Length: 423
Image 1 (tube, rainbow, N blue to C red):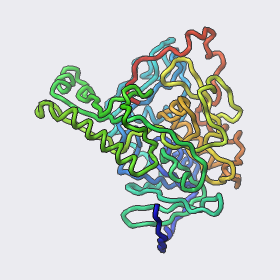
Image 2: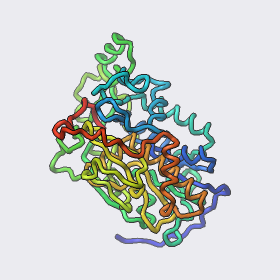
Image 3: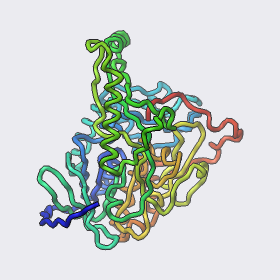
Image 4: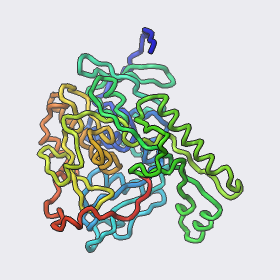
């Protein structure tokens, strides 16, 4: 490709930050909140006009199971705090068994919650502004400014043009490892199936909402290409999208929108409406850090000395994992860390760590690691992980699952839970 050399004098913002978080999805929110609650100066940069990422803007408004499928909760910490906050002001779907916390007796009903994505986004803005976190909307972190493998700060791009902001710790929670890639951190890519889910209403669904007295029943899901998590329904002629190429992402959105329109344009126009299109490409596993460790499906039931949180499989009962701190960092890069779906995973394990509750836990760990690194004046790739774990535990995160939860009958493990829809 032909290239040009372009030079520009970029203004430096006066205020610098202890922690700059790129990306206002749930992982970035957790990192920012954790660092701010420890008294650090935090900037959260969000490329869109609302917080929440795929959970709100992307219309994937589902806290997947936070229990093992037998009535034992596994995921706590900020994940549970966010879940409860997501259902505080809008409509909510949460099983009766879990509505008030721990079930009174063992149950195979899983701890999940659906919520109003737009109301949750509004609530998040109020919440985070009140916490004293500086927010920048409609702004991208376009480039890290590097000195070797150390990041001095980031160049942002907004309506004011390009500006430079100094930061001591940089958290890449972009979902696509945008800053890590541009900083030269090794990354791993994986293609995404062609999915596009929207929210719609119809006269029939409105009737159901009135009959039940539940506004969420007015909404139903529609799709362009209806491809599931495992690629069933993926057209052979459409290549997978890794989400790191401008033309690929544009093509992904174009063909999905055209397919959706093809499906609905023959409907009675007076009987239905598309309420919301996703405000971002609903890509799940695009590009992650090639961390000091990469979590794999074979790590099921494995304990890690540097675990920053135990998590459960959202699809299969009983399956448990621990997330080692090493999936968030790359040695040699002393002030860059990631969280959420940018964490280092392979195959199905990448899917397990990228959904909402585990993403929040890894974001919480990234925030705690930033605090420990700043307070101890050491690189985030060399922090005392025991101190990070201590902070996680004090914030109600389960670090290690109980081996008693591993099923003795291997045939019992892996039973699917109830259908939790498009995630």
